[in-house]
Length: 377
Ligand SMILES: NC(=O)c1ccc[n+]([C@@H]2O[C@H](COP(=O)([O-])OP(=O)(O)OC[C@H]3O[C@@H](n4cnc5c(N)ncnc54)[C@H](OP(=O)(O)O)[C@@H]3O)[C@@H](O)[C@H]2O)c1
Image (tube, rainbow, N blue to C red; front, side, top):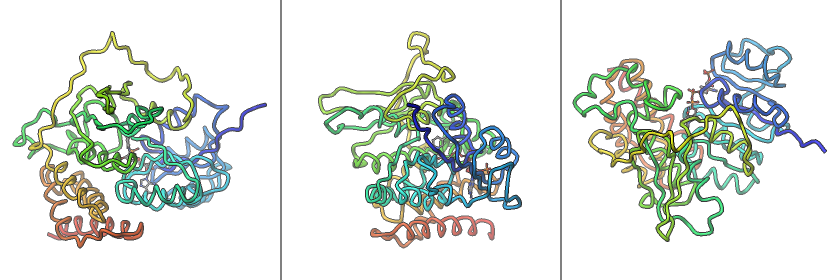
């Protein structure tokens, strides 16, 4: 008997992770039915995707069209919750993603959670919503995906979670040299090709702080059990150290289609000739270095407030999003990003006991406070 196709919607299909999800799906036409695609503003790219994958529904910020071909417009929330959808790939960028993650999990969907902002802001809430409603969170971010792949089959908890970081675009610059770097330089990531926000967050290592927070939520671990090491080659995506001292690592080329495909087919693995294979014998050396905290003030700042928790997490997300927008718009320098976030976090009245709505409000407050403070100066 023919297997039922997995019915999927992709929130953020025109972005880096969204497009790579479609690259994987393209290789498995008998396994997936693309039911919904959702863009922000890039209607041209969305129209091409609709033409190729023939979804029944689409959504976009631009609401000028009610139909694209035979696809009908729905809201992005409808694409996260629609009864004809089994798997939601959540690949929008930014704190707007939290309500969508909640909505999909409330409807018991399997959610490929690439939108890391939502788990950073309200990880415990998302897990509870998933547990209460039969939803599943499948990590897409390469580091949590690597940790997940390492712990599968283990009956004991790891002693340590070791997250690797490429070090971002400026890993070889001194703190003094960072003052005058441009957005173009910051967007030139040494190993990964990603959306703008996460690429800047990789240069400040804010992205790594978010991954530590994501790991703590997903694996119920304390921050003291999580280490970060600089690994320039981005081949070892993360490691776990077990109680007997054995270390397990997950390796592959730095290509997001690997963790995306793992989540799409979990618990199975499939041959995809389109994915690059990694040959140990052809590999250059794999190196691991301690992180120099003087180069990455955002990381220390974020971890200081993440250890307190509450709505500070959402404020870090919102303030960082505004600071990155300001840097990309050339309104602040790269080295101002940490200062802008710190000023906003210090002004926040933290709520340790908070709801999802509180987290969304806190992130919006932090975004507006950071952005407005600067442009009205
Ligand atoms: N890229 C990676 O390799 C990677 C790796 C790990 C984790 N992540 C995480 O995955 C998420 C997506 O990252 P990305 O790099 O794929 O981002 P991206 O390339 O910037 O794509 C973002 C997507 O969201 C859409 N979008 C933007 N604003 C929207 C809005 N208000 N409503 C609905 N859709 C909106 C964009 O649409 P338009 O382009 O049409 O405007 C685009 O499709 C982020 O949370 C990031 O941290 C990414």
